[in-house]
Length: 340
Image (tube, rainbow, N blue to C red; front, side, top):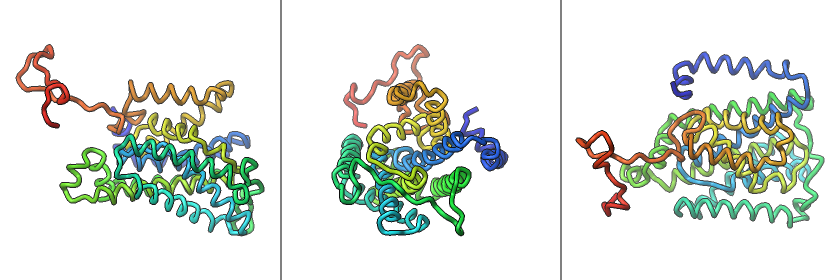
């Protein structure tokens, strides 16, 4: 039985069990280090779920998701340390600023083919990193921004458990929002675009508009995650948002399963916990992500959720009435010269 099918059949019972487990988890994890790791998992659930809208639902390839993560982090850090804004105001503003940059990039590049879009977002990620390092009067360059204030609620300052429950609420709201969107007309339109843009356009779907919307939504959640990360770490620097971070986010999505709701949660949890459990492998983090991505694409394109996603290999149709040993099997159009 597919994992996604199991969760679909027992979704209420599964949701109740998972919710109870997550609520009581801080009572079990008494170590501050363990709570910190659990909080990091929540941050990556936000990031990977946002990227899933772009790659998994719509079929676009973004290789610079960490740039929008960094934009959200620096926006929130600068607003709270330099302007004196409250965290609860800076949080949504950081998401909106990241979404604004995402929509601008989308309007400029989403008419390009997939490979060109991927290279454009990769270049944008590097541009953001270089700007952070060179705009010293604003971002303090390589020194980063320190002393980012702790979030407060009714005069109570957040600690380890407070941070955990806050990211739990944000992650839950994010997953619930994406789940609702996935089962709406917008979600069905995005899936149709992923499967066949020409067919989707012929059915009256505004392909370009929906692409921009998906890209903007994914960047918004990245900005929210960045804002939270800045106040959780209380320090941000350009090193946290390099292209390696984008690669890590993509690997988590591929491992969990592109185009599924549960996939980002599974991929984020596993690839955050493995380097923490095997600390001696931290220096080989990039190697682990690279090998994981290769193995998933080649042997498990549906990820752990085992769903049809962007890495699924297309199946060639067979001619009816032919032999069982493959003779007469239809060859690809590129070989026969037929139109696709």
